[in-house]
Length: 200
Image (cartoon, rainbow, N blue to C red; front, top):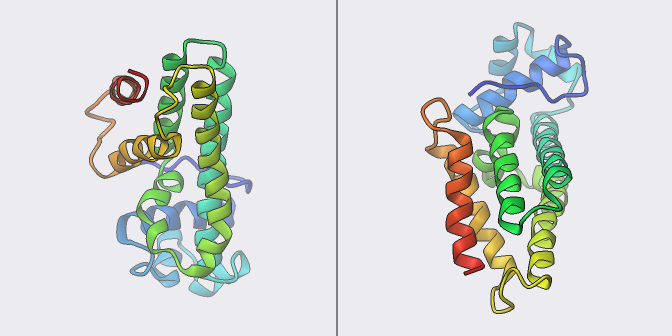
């Protein structure tokens, strides 16, 4: 999986290079198994130099996860702009495609939320959970709007439906290979299964 840098720092800056390499290593090896020394070796700097940019490994992971959510938020915004007035199923598919694009086309920053967040230290989780919850709440609100419009039956628990949808999308990080499968068709398949389940 390639990493598309999402740091505010210039792509060739030390901070951006540290974040890029750390995001990949955290995803591939896990947070606990990745040391700052290993990250520094991969970047090509002394281990102590990392402390010039980040106070700790926890802070580094926090920034990586925050950047990942920023990518997902931007993807949600784009999907909303292009699909808000379209058929509800098309609107959902646009958001599914945008979320999958954030996971697969923006590298380890977004995928880290699936693979690394669950084992993140408490200090990291305290910072990231509210940001993560705010993103997920946007999905719940969208589905509730569709329910209010009569597109989703009132008997459907929208919060549970959103969890099911996220489970389908996020778990694909562990098995879907975009180089061998088509992300558009995959998004359409997830949407078909979801929409025909909740709106049927």
